[in-house]
Structure formats: structure tokens, C-alpha cells
Length: 429
Image 1 (spheres, one colour):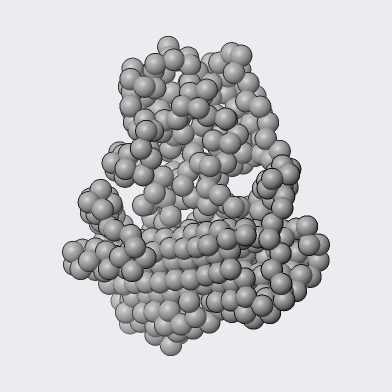
Image 2: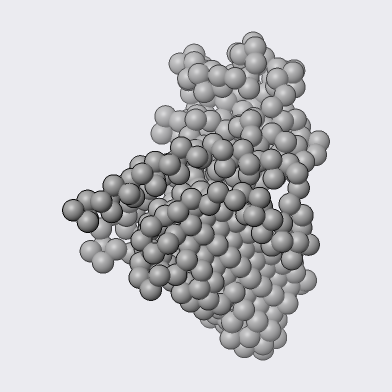
């Protein structure tokens, strides 16, 4: 099956995480959306349609995958998969006997098409093409969910961890995990799956009462940690005497301490010290300083609003912590209010009180103000240093991406700074 993962007009709604990656690279459960979509389709030949600024990065990250290639897209029958689709579990077969469209609440999750149904250049006008296909082709129920915002991933994560565990352990070879000595298991032992190449110290408590726990190869869990399921700890991640609450996914190569509840950490992120992180999504290469506290519940228990692209947006949730973009830096002792958004390369400095709830990309806080960071070369130099500490390099393709994002988000920064100035003038008056 020729399969193409695509980004549609809804991709920017998953900011700030989608600002620096295709939406199908976001985590939910134990794996990325792309990995789950590929499993659902049994794709043997893969292509992707992504926003133009990601083309070079995806080419370097996924060698052998066709990226924004019109000729490949029109070479034969094709299964188009929306990168925001979270497929149902257990997996359902996708019908390919005739062209059709799979919908979730009116949004296209997938479409099986022949070349004549695609525009001459599918990299242009794909959304309009999908609108036409919805009207023209038979509909099937796709199941699962199409993710509109980052907090939808947070909300879905607990259930997804349980569903993926059941799906994974359906095969005998995956159902056997290493059981470390001198650790305590509260609940069902068959809900604990630890790779034999993980390191688990004595005096660790695993609580599977509420769901399963999976720990990947190379992960390290030190003494006096408490891990509550459902939870996933990615390859190479270190949990350092931490309290990991249910509903949490820790991506690869993180350093995690303190208390984390119902949150997703994309990978290569430091939250080494004590502090609370709840109902949040944290991107890659983020550093959260000692004593950083994230509120995830309003005092009046009301609905949480977050700011996306400068506009207040209702979440429909009573618990939303912080949404933190790639390469952000959260200073020691910082207090992040419920529904805080920190954009890519944002810097949050402690002020002894709750900080601004909206920090646009490439901006920093100064007490109750937000200030633009104009020295992009310095920011990229810091990013290169941080990545080198983990044996990774800031490649030229990603540096070009970040420069493109910096330029594209300039209007957002100017608007936020202007609105902040107006608010201060009103208070002064």
C-alpha cells in the first residue's frame, strides 16, 4: 500500500509544538502519531506532504521517504492519512476496494484515491481537494480521533497508554518483560513491562493499580522513585528519584525529577530537579530549572483558556498546565500559571510571582513584561551547545528551519508586545 501522511489546514492549531515539527511527529501514548498511523495502514511505501519549511528537515530525518513529491503522489492509487489522526485501537482495516473518505466528526482522517482524483500538483491546494473528495466520494467511519489542539493529546494520553499496552502485549514475544529485584509492585505484575536493557535501582515502587507501565531500553530509574501507571518511559530517559503520576509519557533521552502528572514530554528535555509539572505538553530540548512549578487548575475550577497565535482559546478542560515549545528555557523557581503557553526558544525568568501566561516564540519574560529576543545567532549557538551535550548536532537544515520560524512569527511577537504595552498603559492610567 502506497501511503502518504499529510498536514492539513488544522496543523497550526497544535502550536506551539507544531511550529517546529510536522504534526504527525507528536507523541500520544507510547509512540508518535506517525508510528501509529503507519501501523494502522501497514504502509510498505511511504510519502509525506508537509508544510514547505519542514521539507528539508523531513528529508534528512526520514531517508527513503518521498517528501512533497508530486510525481510520486500521482504515480498510482494512494492512501492519504491526516497527520492529526489518532487511529482507533484495536486497529480497523481501511477499505481500499474503491475510492472513499474516512471521517471523524466531519474531518477527513484518511482518503483512498486514484491519481485522477488528485490535483495536478497535490502539494498545492490539498485542503480544497479534500473538501471536494468529501462531497464526491463515499464516506466510511474512520474511528479514533482527529487532534485539533495540543491539550487534546494530553487528555487522550491516559486512555491511549492503556490501549497501546493491550495491543502490544497481544503477541507473546512482547508480553515478557524483565522484573527487577528489590522493587515493589503495587497492583498487577502483568501490567509492568520493562525492557531487559533498562536499569532499575532497588527501592523503586511501581503502581499498576490504574494502568500499565512500560519502560524502554536504556532507561534508568533510580532509587526512591514512584511510577504510577498508565505511564511510559522512553529509551534512554532517566527518572531520578521522581514521582511520576498516571497519564504520563516521557519521550527518549530525558532527565526527569520532581513530580510529573498526566503530561507528555517530547524528548531530550531536562526537568532534573524538584518541582511540579501537571497536565502539560513539553517539547524537545527544553530545560526546566530547579523549583519550577506549573499550575494546572484554576482556583475557581473553571474552564482553562490558552493563548494561541495571540488569541484566547477555550480548551473545554478544567485541567491544562503549560504548553512549552522546543528549546524553551524555564528559569529556577519560575511559577507558571494555568494555561501558560511558551513558544519555541522562549525564555521564562523567575519573578517571585506568577509570570505572563503567553510568551511568544523567541521572547523572554521580564517580570510582568514580555521582551523580544533579537539576537537569533546567540539563541542558535545555545541550542547547538545544549544538543552537543547529548551527542547531537544542530544541523544546517534545522538552523534554516528555526530562522524561517523566527521570521514567520515576527508579526505574532509585535502584536503581543503591542498588546502588553497597551495593558500597562491602561493600568497606569
